[in-house]
Image (tube, rainbow, N blue to C red; front, side, top):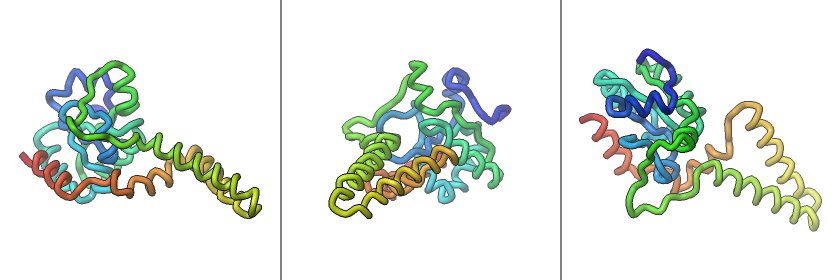
Length: 187
């Protein structure tokens, strides 16, 4: 692929010739994904390397996530394994903001997007720390710890809380789903 990144408009024009890999959690993927995208969560990327390498030999890979951060990480890891891939600039968020079509699996109730899950969890922990701090002053350290984690997250553009939440059952792919995805990519 000539570019390390494609804009949503560039990707839309070439969507029919790209193999799209969505590295978000299955829950995020279910909220809406690029047409024809295959869900290979970032934490399962290593298990899919052989299949992704074969897919890249047949055509160009486009890796997507919500904002572009995880897909850039996936592209870096793929490049280290000798698999060329591009990322979608701005991720699915920009894709939908520009009015491009997304597909949602029929009959599946999608969990909240990861960013919303993080906001709920962080807010609940801060509130719990403040309320519990009225009875036990030391409990305020919960709130301070979450605040420090949020600052660290912003400075490093990483999110430890999202990594933890991604391990919850509703955010994990079932083995059969990942196997089906890898089989479809192998065709």
